[in-house]
Length: 344
Image (tube, rainbow, N blue to C red; front, side, top):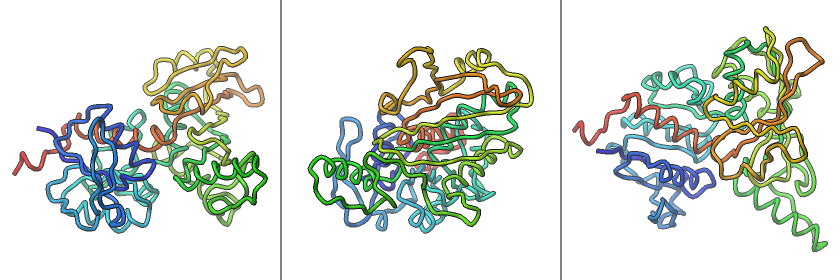
């Protein structure tokens, strides 16, 4: 007997990816329910070869639901995740609302799968920020090998990280450039078409943005609180796929050749590093793919025990939906989740 699963925010970019990945990976589900706001009642979404009609979150009874994959934004998660969890379902939340709650595990299954055992305190598990998720997948095996002291990372984040509105704005502005029409700006603080914007989320008092802060505190919580990290997060005119230029300083020597062999056998990673024209991965090529791709591995001569590399991943998948489904799989595989209908 499988589990009863609900996807909240099923009409959004990540919600649709959640449904696709649940079907692709044949998650053991007896029932999949697509939930959204009341204005989306009856809206159809795909689940494998099936079509599901959306139901209203506000009207749903979660007493027989085992897992809720929540991707409807922070405000909705703050209100609904505790209410759903109180009815006995485990909520896997994609927003930033619960990530730094000490009673809520923040999980990337390739990095800290054992942390899922802490879900029972609140019946909530948090999914990390999309840029953090791919970074810690790459850092974990390197940290195990030589202990990371410091990370300097610059991100090149696609507009899909800002939702459908961000993708629409890039599309419409790009058309406007060629048609010489009046350009409209709604989602981003400056024009995104043929431009880059070094601002993601709000500015904090210290001059960093909240997106940059998230990468720091989430990496510490998931991987190691001793790691020092500084980030510059940039929005780029790419539809899907986040890229990161990463510079790492280790406590012990680790050459690029050694790192390449370590990463080659690490879970969730593929190496594409040919040291020739085009011998690397780009966000265009990683869209629709599950792994974190590592390229441009090289020694950093500016520090002792330094390494530099390029890292790309599909932010809607590993950065959000795939990671959430992998968390659900970790609960099932560790037999931490009891089917509520069967138990009844």
